Image 1 (tube, rainbow, N blue to C red):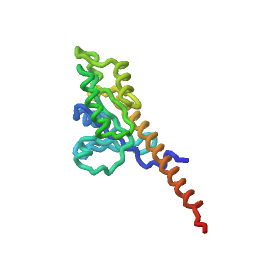
Image 2 (cartoon, one colour; image 1 turned 30 degrees about the horizontal axis):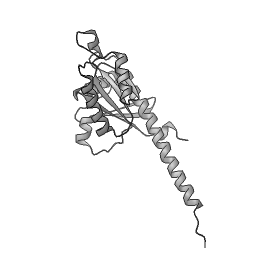
Image 3 (cartoon, rainbow, N blue to C red; image 1 turned 90 degrees about the vertical axis):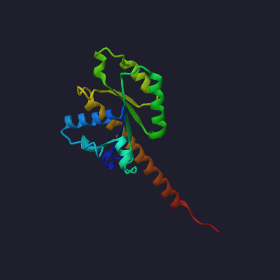
Image 4 (cartoon, helix red, strand yellow; image 1 turned 135 degrees about the vertical axis):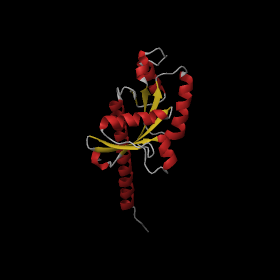
Length: 190
């Protein structure tokens, strides 16, 4: 049986609309956690309960790396300030089809501090419904401006990624065990 320690690192890719939101969230999380984040590298390493986790800024990751990390989960960040839900859904569907390729993802609603202002925003219940309709495993919210919910959003992303990494490891081990069993039972008869 796979143990949590069998997964050396959980990798989470942060995709945001607009793209600057990913950098802002990573910077805020780094400052809360006492970590250093370099926007040039686009990578933030941390640990949750002793398990290493790397958050990658998707735009930087695509420009500077050749998929040197497998991605266990995507955190797709979108502003709750929206006037056109259909346009947002179309944009996210392109991301899901183009970048995510069936990997698990969570939706992270950003700019929640704007709910207190005059701008039109998605309600929490509408945002949760929207996230489930497009196939997100979870919906979380946070504000890079005030810091509300940032830690929880990153920890939830890690939790989803950890489960995916363990399931992937179990599938690989089961496949290897089956292949080994087939090789052992095969024999040549005359």
